[in-house]
Image (cartoon, rainbow, N blue to C red):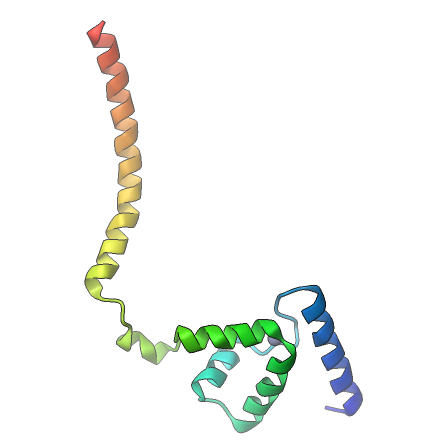
Length: 118
Ligand SMILES: [Zn+2]
């Protein structure tokens, strides 16, 4: 990359940073950021991203996020979420729907009993 291109890229990134907090077309892919965070990345890419992070708050935040919440595929096995908790979460989510229909049925019954009580 020429000095001029680099200058343009940096200007663009600074502008992006000032105006909007989102990824720009010059941002590394999330996979690259993840690889950067986990250290499984080529030295050249590492340097590129290191430079990018100085200008891009969004990507810096993303790397920070990965540091706290590992996303790598190989980490899935080591996930700290216990199976019972996962099942509980699932049950709660499906219960939401069941509760909703139960509530509807309850209302219907209440209406019916209102009529029969009269
Ligand atoms: Zn970025």
